[in-house]
Amino acid sequence: MKKSFVICLVSLVFFSLSFYLHSIDHSTTIKLQNAIESPLAVKNISVFLSGVSTRLYDSSILLSVKNIYVSFSSPWYASLWLYFLTLGIIGLLSLAFIHRKTIIRALKNFTLFLIDHLDPVLN
Image (cartoon, rainbow, N blue to C red; front, side):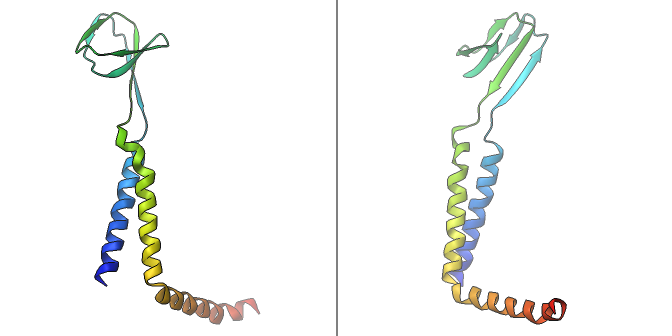
């Protein structure tokens, strides 16, 4: 019983972690309007000026552009959401394999229940 509880709990943790990682697995673009001669502190982010992507490594730079598009990419670990989802599914399938007799008995009882109660409706 303890082994089943631990497997179920770990699978739920993997599912939760995969959903969180999936939610942060996208890049974000911010448009700064009227940024004429305003200092912009950037470090290792991509800045798009007139459709040209440049990588800036300065801690601060002086820009005199009307519109600036700053793109922040997702962290490297955000793309691991599929692996955690797979581990969660494997955990639940192993749990079903461990308790296959109980699951088969429950499905059999549920099927007999449906047959008994739907038989008058279907006839």
